[in-house]
Length: 567
Image (tube, rainbow, N blue to C red):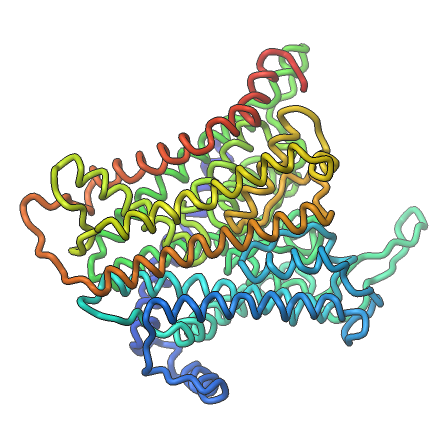
């Protein structure tokens, strides 16, 4: 427990000051103000506008903004799909890897273009260096930039009065990449390389071990992808073992930095939100709600892992904490903290095998993703998802006090309520439908690696990860089949657009409204009561939505372990 507290304090000591600074910096960048990087990066930004013929002064309606975001995402899917199919005849393929099978290529293209980064393949034996760099790494930047752009459009909706525009998608995307993602990724990649994360275009290395056996060690452009994978809450690993691999995550320092990187931009965007609406207390209130949810989940997961497997205690074996599936160079507490961070955000990177976690830990990870990953969440989309819950919470508060619900001076009508409900519930509906199909057809059941409740948890986790655009896996499900590649790919698209489009719809709707003056009967949204109502709404919606599935999966598995059963 001491190690857990120290790990959390280390994370907070680095994360909070960095997030506050970055939040202030991003607010200046996205409001078109001068920052300390403007002299170096403004020429780059202007060059992109000239090459792409973008008029940075021309803003868009919510409808046009949505069309651009969806079209750009789908174009990314097509380009990445073709790149994988053709990689066998393209350069920078020192291992001579063939083109990727069509269903795997399609699933991967959708995955990386939607910021999911679900991988049903082993990266080091499937993707060439060119595909890793030009395809996967590029989409890591662009998909994260799209998420930030949509969050900015929604924020502007609450700021503006009687406006028909929410900004320019292209300007927001360019500034997100040029001013935020690229500089941070460059710094982190250099630091990771200094700690032993590999970065090379050479073929895989062949060495002779101490036993005299020849072994092939996969290498490639890892550090550059590792940096944006964490900072952009992408999560796709160069290696199949992801951040448990020593060439992706060599030591305790890199593990800490990667943990910070996952949370940095999502946390900073909450402070950016407070600055852009000129109400920092509102940003801090949202941050407080996220911290409460993060701490609750982390406490349950740590307790479950430290308590260990009850079957060992029943057998008279002093097993202690559950260390199965964890890297000893990190230890239990940093592994659980990494798992909590990767599922609370939409990162999906793993430094331990979630399939080996205790059932209640798996339940926490599932809940984090199932509620839309609003506990900080993905870059941009986490804030959008949290604002959906704010709209729902204000509707409940409005019913209690007998007033039309409002937030930041904007009256929230039926349209905003419907869009918030769609944003919160459409993904779970699709998830549960796919889960039912997968557990009813032979092609779905064929992928199960375990029977009974744990097998159900594997499939539930896969679809929850897909619709949540997370990308992590329990690791016990054999998902590289046409059935799972196609259904998970569709789930990823639904999950992505079910967040982006309702968010833009709400932003465009409230932008057209007048600002209502705050009165004595206005429900305050910066205090403790608001935080309690918001956290309660999130927990209630999550519990009501997923309780039947959770009961048949991780909860049943936990109860069977406590009762002495194994299946």
